[in-house]
Amino acid sequence: MTEQEDIGKLEQQRKEKLEHIKQLGIDPYGSRFDNAESTQAVRAKFDEKLQSAPGETSPSGGPPQRAICAGRIVLLRDIGKLIFITLRDGSGIIQLGLSKKLLESQWVLIKLIELGDIIGAEGQLGLTKTGELTIWTDKITLLAKSILQPPEKFHGLADTDLRYRQRYVDLWANPEVMLRFKKRIAIVSTIRDFLREKGFYEVETPMMQTIAGGAAAKPFVTHHNALDIDLYLRIAPELFLKRLLVGGIEKVFEINRNFRNEGLSPRHNPEFTMMEIYQAYADYNTMMELTEELISTIVQKHCESSKLQFGDYMIDFSRPWKKIPYAELFSQYCGCGIHDIAAIRKNAKAAGIDEAKMDDEVVINKLFEEKVESNLINPTFVIDYPGKLCPLTKRSKSNQDFAERFELYMGAIEVANAYTELNDPAVQYENFTSQVKGAGEDENVFRSLDEDFINALKYGMPPAGGLGIGIDRLIMLLTGTTNIRDVILFPLLKPEK
Image (tube, rainbow, N blue to C red; front, side, top):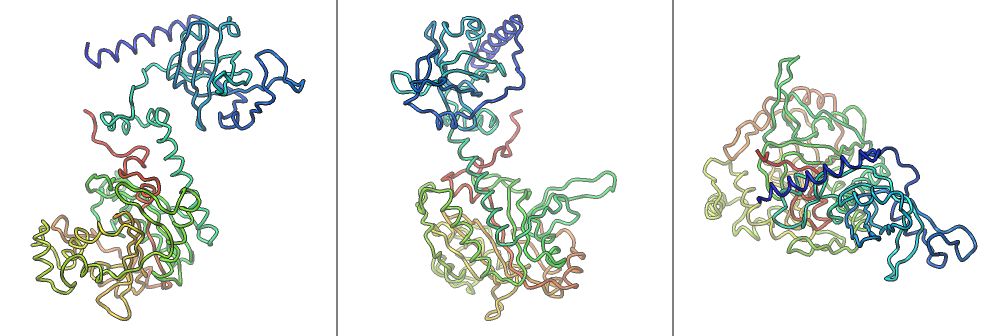
């Protein structure tokens, strides 16, 4: 019998039990279930000194300790007239003890209950001989019959793809997965609280845009039938958030999706969560201070230590974090100076980079990514990027060849990108019209010039600092997860058929 035939047979057996339950006059998909407590709350309230045998009063003379829980059956041991069930809800697990003596009237139903079913249980609390807290159940309610057999060894390497495709099973089959995503939710909540306390306003800007702008990336294209126009899923919210600075919202942020029509890898998903922040009357130094304080706050609140394991790396988040110029790191690890173009191209070619059709600045950055990034383990602000790589950034007053930009690296991954924002409409217009994307993939970074954004700058945008943080990558680092798919609930996957 093939594996698929075996699965089909098990499903058929479960469907037969489903029909049997219906014949008993019981709804196999339940209804509202009131007064359920979380397993965590039940454990917290239990007082061992007040426990008593089922049906007996408490040693204090009062009623016995009771509990009502609801959840999924993740373990079931049937030893005849006694059944032990491990029940899992959103907060944890608890054991149920089901005896035929206490549940005579429901025993036929109970014998039809299986792994994966969702039930409600009510009964008296007590400890087993081995010290396990148990609800000695005197009432069972079937809330949802599971037709599919729970997968065995679901977390095994062979089932990695299945875990992504069936996240709804992964979450309850593997408690560490549930904890990781709850941690993600808590971290994002902390980010929002942190920024609100500092006076930032959260907004939402368009996901579909008539012009693909705000970053150098290939967009997804769709079509709006009523207007008969092509639209682009946004690659960045930057230009809209800056419009809000013009409008007078001086501290603004957005946490939302970006879409980039590029490859899949352990660090890239075409749909990802980005946070962008803009603050009037600030610069990239302000953003550095904000970033370090924000991430340090998250580590302190949500991590057990300031030193976290990430793959082969141990990252030390202790402050202060390093600030190192781009050119200094380039010279240290690339074997040539940032202005020695001939040597740079020679080294790039030796590193397997197809540099022939790339602009000089693109070759420089490709070589930087190849040679430098893997050395940036502890949090490091790489500051002062080559100006031509930064069309939305103010140039350094001390050296016009460089821009006031930083990228934050940790665990050899770029996590954040920030600028002192360019607010001169004439310079911005010149940058937009002259910018060409390298690597020969698509020569127009901006499909057409965003005239309205230039128009907004003409009204006057205050000097500002801007920051983008990749939320998925940050969660990876803070949870020790080396594959981005493990921190996205439903990552993009190739269809099975």
